[in-house]
Length: 609
Image 1: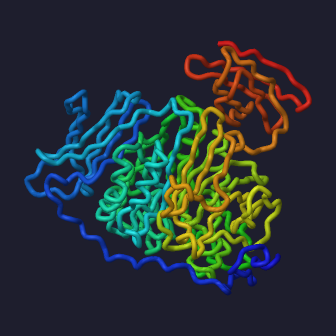
Image 2: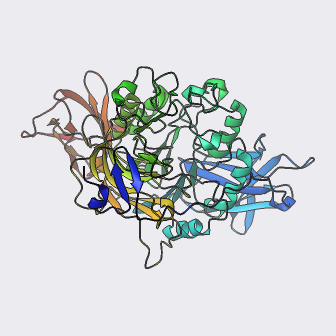
């Protein structure tokens, strides 16, 4: 492999399995970490810090976050909406301890109009916002995505507030690590609300907790067991279950009702669910809650159980029986969600992180890792099961955590046979990471100036196709920033944008990270090569029916899609007979025993309801 400096990458030279720096200033050091936070004492008319909400299929979920109440103050909170020139109370709820949260659930919500709301406590405390109407008629739905709200950047975030408003984002997604103060979630959560309150008060917002939120450097939930080691890498939670429940209550009680709320070990809840907003259906995952811990499950091949630094490491030896990733419950959810297209034209999966091990250098340019088991590239069988389920709904994947922005097309059996993921950059990247594969790739991309693109094996032997990455440099503020995803519903395309911190996105000189934007087609999120086709479906009344293809006799879903136009020729990946379901609800036509045809043969089926 040529020295990287010769490939147009100044300042870094590949030397065996490590990197050496020459002729380049070091990365700008981050600001010093602040002292532990102190919970502020506020005036009694300011005890409501912020509120988070979502609306899904006629149900408003809103959670108000309070500062500590004093003895004798009411332990109830009221929700009011404006009607004309007056306010009307629609609900009252109790304040839950620990954590001082007040969750509301309002059924029969009219999502067709903007509704000003206010949360009230006692006589004088008032917090106002806007429940936006469902933008189902917008041609393009805009999602702003964030991760890694480092405790080395505790000040206000005026640049983010300004940019989200400039993007006019319809939905906000915080993928995890909103809080970095291990064991002190409440104080840091109040700070989070102060930093982002001006954009979350009037936009639906998804927050899901990750490892630092629950007080761990890495999270291996293992179905809720109690960890017996400080790092938690034997599987389970390090801190008490009541603390974990407090964190999840604060960050997720405003999400749509869980798909299956059955508690896991230690009585910890489950919040994975779906949200349909603006004509896009989002699956919200808990990708670390069932994940196995590596300690004692696989041999240690580095300084700690999850870090492999041995170049002779064979990743196949770590794909061991019994190692789980999403768990059977979430896989069942994804299968069902793939078939549910009510109110949706496109789909996306929101998770704590992506299903690949793309960060090869950690912390500094000498921190080479062969493999990182904390990534969702491990365990490999679990990773492949997740990707196989997700592609059945032609869903884009959006996540964070890796401190490294990437766009990757994933492969299971072949490069590119699954979907695309967008790992967004950290809000502030205290702990930098780099995409810098040890082995050369193949099929380099011709549509970008980025050198290390194309087909690679990641550190765990998974097939990945790198489209774009944002390695930290002295000039880009450690590659911190945010992601924007634009869902173009009419054309069924997606535009992925990656913006550096402190850039005014509305300015004439604003530039994204090199390699972005990336434009994708919805159907490319299912990348398997067809072996045969089913007869072309001629659809009554024109267009946009939901089509499910189910293999016979196994009954396994192959895929489900809201198709475009009055005809659709379903591709299949094995010869045989299939059940084809067309339509939704009462307008559902089931065609059984549909036999596949070679690619050079054709037939038609008229589908009438």
